[in-house]
Length: 252
Length: 232
Figure 1: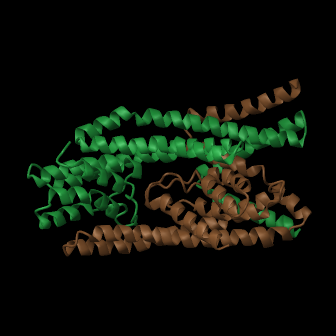
Figure 2: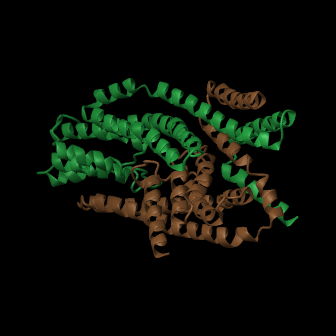
Figure 3: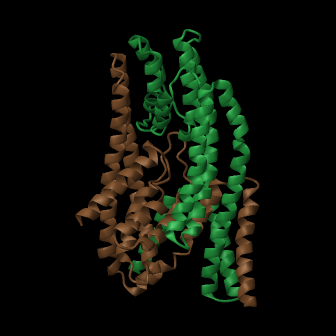
């Protein structure tokens, strides 16, 4: 498993959780990436302090990907650094490898974690919190973190086995299919959440045609807000508009 | 009071570190934070009520690349504290609920501005780190990262104390000033917020297959409710 001891590997993995610790607009996750790989570099270049600095400078270059997917790149980069340290690889291979992977992994991670898993976990949490807050919080944290921590663990392990293993992991993990499944699940749960709450209000406003009328208004409201979001109107702008309307009503 | 302040500071530091700097275990989500703030100020259920709505509201804004989404953690700090002190033994009335949600928006935008400022200061820390490494100091990377995390934690603590303080002021001083008529006007808006949240979920998960899934489920739930009311 490379030339790294178990304790160094564990240190690198834990440090992966701090990838965004010094997030900035210029280098983005550069300091976090260098911090993560530092125990491995100290191990490879323990007799060569000058080479350690050269290697650190390489790893302080611009870096940005999805934080949960960073483990794949961090693990694989540590393996390439090992080959660079033993003179088997060109140091430029590291920059090329990172640039090649960070964009695509960032896009996969953003789509899977932010665009599918988080909405699914959030809406499940919001629905279950109607029964009991603790149930909602437990559902949110469990649904998100089971997948999140597993991807971090397996991704890092695959990366540490080399670039080919990293690519195999990404292929076998089937992120495209999983993203689609979770998006559908989030949409169903979102529809159920909107349906339950709008039905409750609809039947409070009356029975029969009046309730159906209210429900159709609720459907239209969801559609209009969706169109506004598509036109890049932010939720804050909609809420501020409602705040102004509410304030005007109070003064009247 | 001192314990409450310490708890708010600790929750703020943990939530804001989790939000960007480290772990991303979703401890910063509005449902978690608003419930915790509600618990600190005496009514976890009222906090959770507000947190559940805020949880979905800002989902459509994804933290992709250099974009900074509105600070829903800050909105939850405000909302949880305000809801806990404004609620009575029967819970939070609909008018106060709407007002708390609407008043939390400036907190979300202020938190976003502070987040951007912290990231700009981090740029200076990163530049100093690179300079130190070039001079041969490998430990500068660890110091730089620690400084970045500390900055997120300190700003988070300050924001948490400020937003919860504003929440307490709103719940104790502002909301009781509204009469029943004003509260009734605000209450009219309450059904809109979960719908905005649902639209937010739908928008960020939108594909060709999710649109029918979303609308059909919404219709089915309504039709089932209608049927059971008619039958029962």
